[in-house]
Image (cartoon, rainbow, N blue to C red; front, side):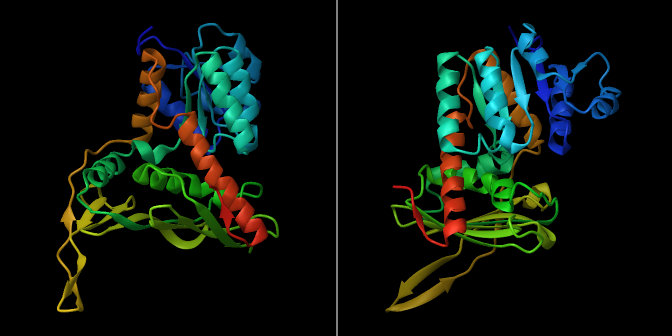
Length: 331
């Protein structure tokens, strides 16, 4: 099997599912599209001649030509359908979150290992070239000791009536922060606001505390006047900003700012920012290519089941904190 003849199916043709369909088709790997909505299938199939369509997920499981299934279904369906696919011997690319409970996430990891299947979670920004470069910079020690991180993921919409903003937006930021620090937090504290619905949080602010003293916070909202996608890293030597709403030449900036002590006084040493050159590419295409490579060559994905489980544990703790109003300890 090689990348040119691998056959992949996509289950779910919602907003993001359609992006996955487009990308795998362009990579010449799309074999079948599955959705329970016949009208949606009819509409999308017009753009992808030669690709099979079905309303029955079991058709994908029975098709021996299909080597992997992409699960782009509502979050509450991730565990059930990923489990079915793995038990049928299919590798799985499941959109975030891995599942809605760490117990189910652990079960999927175990099943994937037992059935020799690849399990990958769709934490898209791990495959963004600017974030990949940022990760290299952090690991090199150029920023010094990482003291504080914060991220804003804000927009006006898309509003959901079942999945709250924490589970909808925050997985990306949790994934990036855990990856940069290579550590899980000791404790999590989350508070939020319920403005459009009494049961679904529209905005949340999450604080993460790590054993080495590093702290982080994540602010997410779909009730914001403009789009903001920014990750800031404050180090003892330098600071970095990854802003995905900027042009490619300004997506990643380094600020050589630091606080120095002189004669017992704190001196703010400010310098002009430096633009970091990054390869211009589509993160989703990078992510899909990575999944194909992992399936074909039996490689461990960057965002494998274990990485997805770490993010899921933080999400669970954050939700518990949101519900109880208390700090939740993970360790």
